[in-house]
Length: 400
Image (cartoon, rainbow, N blue to C red; front, top):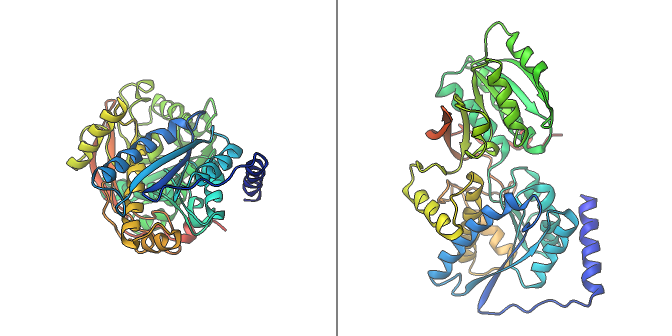
């Protein structure tokens, strides 16, 4: 974390060098600052969730505001750069932010989140799914709006065993990111519980996201006495497309289980008529979410942005503002410590995209209700839902 702190120190030096002074916030407003990417590669991840957050902010303002005050939004571009992220965090703090919203990814959101922590303010990662995006990597005032990657892996394993009667599993890990490793961490924690009930892990292998070929891994799968019932594929874009395409081209028809990172239909043309492929989502972008309020949200999102939601990563932005605003109302103040205390009291707090729980030990979701999306003949649709039978414990989330 030292290199992130050094970014913040450099940014502070720059601010003072140009003679900046803290901006005075209007007492009739509550300022929310977005230190997120509006340029660079992270924009594709940050902007949809930010747009969803704006929808909830507009709803709150239309209903009379928060504590009788309108929410005012200020923003600063991280430019998808860690050093710029620290500066962006300081910029929105300088503009009076009481909540600092940071990028979807831990590595790129942490510099702004650390700036908020140093200022004694709450930060919320838009959709980061590493346990570090919170207390463990930033500090006691930091939270994430999404659900841990480990929950995704555990959910898909238990659902496949219980609902689809899968007995034999093969674990295939893309070692590129902490997110990918997190999916398989959750799968690894769940598998011994399933093995005690008759499941079996018949093999495991690794690859890298930019590998042009996974022929060797496929050969090892095909050399098994029988094709596994399910392959737990812990990967994300862009390499996920190549891996899935090669598995199917090799004639392997096993269920492919993945994390939320491959949600969306934008890539399916690269694997024509893909079937027997499953992902967990917090809400459906495909027009079939069982909750009519989610359907209304999707319509509101399209009206605001001109496009349909591109993946389930739109949704955490809305839930983030929702739970923070509830905590502020209950605390009757925007004071960070008081709001954190109210957030940590939330136990299965209802939101549009499933319940949210925060504790003094974990500012993330280690258990959540997921919709299960099946892609069949190239068409994704919701086929069920699942909540893992128990939360993923801390020792499975934080590796020694």
